[in-house]
Image 1 (tube, one colour):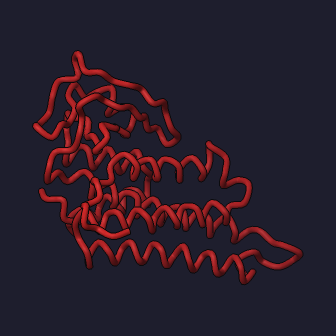
Image 2: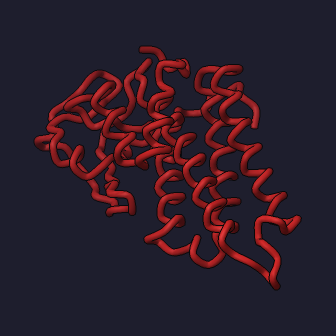
Length: 216
């Protein structure tokens, strides 16, 4: 499968929305990298804990290699049941489907987060005014929804690595907007803040290297 953002990968978006990051990444791994740890350009791996413990090989540009004897640097666990590490010499296989699948997962996570933020605000009031009716809140919700729509449109309009950079940038902005909508709760590591951090780390680990001729 190529790095083009195939419509066939939209089911990762749906699983992420309904069940979260670990479930969506588990499905993505089973369909694209079974038995092999997927690695980003910097050799970073960021996957559910059960996948990290079960895989005996890791991805390199020249094909999978055995983990036995590999130089690994654990980077600690993150919320949502994910674990990060760096493997010396690891890297993505050209044409792999994992990076685009990760972008679809992040889109579903952004939609999930916006829904949670909206539900959180639905039951809150400020000086006897429903929080959802406050102009600033409505503007932030609109901006977040617009960022999600922009990312979704880019999947169809501009497939390939350049589009992935723009998609991830839009989804980063959506996540940060949603954190503000949650108020103080949004910045707890065990709550939405942890989910946003996990989503951003997925982008940091697996976004393809920017083409030299691509603009900012």
